Length: 164
Image (cartoon, rainbow, N blue to C red; front, top):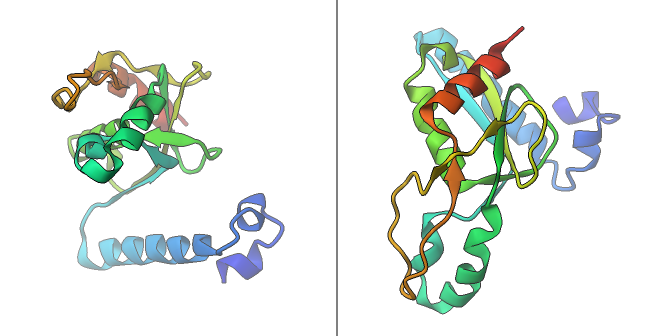
């Protein structure tokens, strides 16, 4: 059992609901099935998801969402193979990473982690494209300003993440 074998691991201690064991079991199952049935997989671990296209979809929460949609403004995205410290991840950047993984042979059979940072972090790549998902302004005509990396910056992020 992952939890019993890793009780000294800080990630297990900081996980009060012990979901890390379930996630690890699920990842193991995906890897076993991929091997058994000969298909590729990519696992992406993200931090707490922030912002995203849901911001204008629920009138009951529109004011609260309107105030929180821009909390994902980030100057950089940090992609690593395997784990990294827990942080927040913008939904736009996570969605863009999924597309990038599907388009890249080097992402096959890998486990990545992705986080965003408001202050630039060493090893991160700049988020230099505004509103990549091309979502319209909200009901109050407030434009979205959520940045994601460009194709060139994603190339750089994958190169850094996969460097041995």
